[in-house]
Image (cartoon, rainbow, N blue to C red):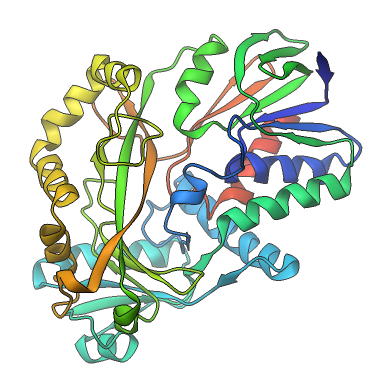
Length: 400
């Protein structure tokens, strides 16, 4: 069966659907096919992140992360208010628990000023208590523009808006691209649901981005490695201990924000995540294993160079992954009163992280063009917050 569309989006996560929505706004008379290999949209990174709308305070000034986060957050809040997407701009605090963390905290604050993060200010120990009575810290940053959102609900809204604009556009679930044949005129995608043709194809495939790019004969200098993040949650009788969002001062050597407390849109409180190398890209249990995923990750020289640089940190993360006591000990740095009896195991997610040949984690967005196809290779946090701004960037590439 042959299906012809003006545009094809491969990947039904937040970035793919935001891109489809922005394309449909720009070209209301053009048809768009969205191909998603799972039985539902937003099943992987989109539906398994912490549900936070980030403010942009952390990111290197001038980077795509910084620019897209500011713009993306503004667009995200406006879209959510207009279209009744569940969200709450509740603010968050970033807490230094020792004087040794204060220089890093001040660096973050200065980045926030350069990135024009609105309303940020320092809190002393007493002011921290006013925001979060059970949190102990020597100094903190109050970030009023951060918030929480239902990202899967947002994805559904994007799909509804796309079809509302053009009923000829369509979402295809359980549709996995097997083969890609591209040239300067047209791209043909062979899938289990038939062949799809379009003059322009945009691949937003997250954890599978490098593999899909290789199907399109695109040569890459990076490899995608998965890092699983395990969450605990506060038991219902302990949720009173957290009001909103509480983050530690992150380790500047890593693109992860550390184990934090997050009020979810449903009212629960999550604690986490950690970050451990996963033996299965789309595996969400501690024992999940894929021979292919493991072999490909370990056959890439950059993976071993990454391990060599950060093996101590990796061992600590693995210890916490398998020990509730050690996980809670990490949380106790910010909340000394929390105990193992306050928390219970929750869900897990896997973050797609591009690593180069030198073992460096690619810390910014990476988008490649091949013929008329666009591949989003690396879309690290805050990609969900930035989804509408990233979509604008992709649409601009399409127009070139």
